[in-house]
Amino acid sequence: MYARRERVCRFFDHVTRAAAERDVRGVYTVAGDALDDEAYASLQRSVDRTVSRQ
Image (cartoon, rainbow, N blue to C red; front, top):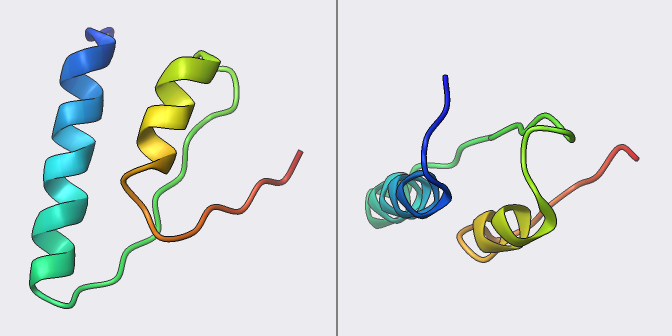
């Protein structure tokens, strides 16, 4: 499935904010080749910590 970068990043930001407001912790995974560097950087801004297995 394909989606516009802005929509994916906005949705991810919404999900992470809603979880944080409820003191919920989550683990999100992203396939390394699924996003370009700009999209990945945008998703990183929505979370507290990132871990890379590269």
